Image (cartoon, rainbow, N blue to C red; front, side, top):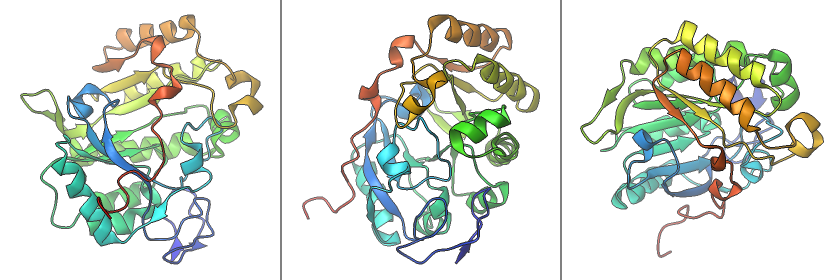
Length: 294
């Protein structure tokens, strides 16, 4: 195939096992970890966790990525579409609240096939926000909850730190499509989201102005959509090559973000600064990828 799934539209040739595009992935799913995950927002994880399926490769190249071995180095194991569907049910058997597909944009056709027949729990699409609205339309009726990042409104910063100057425009269009598919949000009596879109934003040290622009754009374009304002930034990946983000977030920086968050009246979540811990990054060790007992 000549791939145009993400906003880069690189037209790369991709076979089942190999690809020449930015993501460097073939068309069959490549997985790094499949296990219950307890550290998402409370309306996603609940008490029993969401079934997190971490896909290898990424359409963005964030210098500070905490999942570096997966996103940049392509760690993982290629599986069949039928095996991917088996994994969903193995996670559901563990009592998870939902199945979360994490950074799966490069595998959309295979994921669509794996979701045919539906699942008995909500399907969560957890992504960087760097998506093509046209590709997301292919997921309509298959994804219940969208959990996109909205990383940047500063195009220059997006180019320097993630190699995607068009990120702001792409994210706005993508999130608008997600909301079109899922709004209004629906919650169960247990407080868990059953359907909807929840926008995440990670505050970067030294770039509070970018955060304030993101929050204002969300309020302007996506009024009423819940937001998760995250303080959990830890310098990882190649953050050390960028002096402005080679440190943790200062309390006064996050306080400014929270002040605007509250003034704009967002529903959603904020974090404590002690959330910035590398311990929250899961071990990418192929857990749950192979058949249990195999």
